[in-house]
Image (cartoon, rainbow, N blue to C red; front, side, top):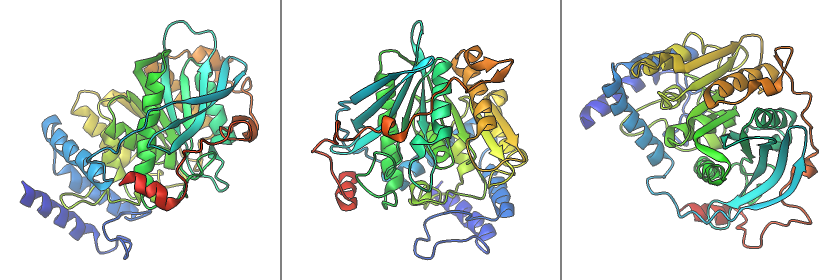
Length: 389
């Protein structure tokens, strides 16, 4: 079996190695536009030779998940700290509330974000985790597109938690370019799931996740690793040729292992047979999704008799964001899969975000003069990396 796997890796790299763009300092990494578009499609055809039904795909899926854990050095999960949530500044708005929240993931490292909750609910609510993408000024959690989606999902009846990338927002204990940023952000995501599912008003059987760009990477990786996630919506990220341009996405060897080569398409397919919506556009690396990535993932879903559980909304004239039409697609899918009330956010049959209140960043910050970061917080890249060992 090991010889066959190594032979397969050799064949794939032989096909693609002539023009792939490796990092000479880290040949074990696949970063950025590592493949050309043609190579990415060729790689998918080569991967498909390794399985032809549910049983053979699940053998491959086991290998891929192990590769994720090994590549991120997660064969053993580090010791998590008790959550001990810090919650303050509850704001009651039009149909929802917003609260500023922090809790520990690793001892001395705090996940920071905002908790959005619906008003006037009966029984338990679905929970949605919202990792965000990159932003030039590192305030992505406070941006309009982030606030709009969290508020609207809450108005639909979901409890929503959006949390900072490391180095962003309130998460300033280390730089974003930490060498093991991918590992730390995955651990923070897993801990965020722990927090969300610990809330007494959240239905643990209705947990969704959606993020864009780098948050899209977090979306499909967390879905691959954690079965608590029942529905996923990765936005403008799943590509056969692009592997993520930041160290927090492709800075650890999760795609190229001693036993196999893979791409984000196969990693996203690890969601099967759980419902998934791919949102793509015509002006970034997801431009080929309707013809390349989506049919490939749909084939894997068909092994489970679940071809209709994966969908693609493609916006050929749009670019790389989580804008209104992308959000509308996500709302409709999440409403149908998590039993949310879409009618709460419709006006004349269209999504209406006008009742949402866009708050100043200061109103959403977790740590400030009145609520300082706890003294036990570990600060500095070296000190944070030591937590990961």
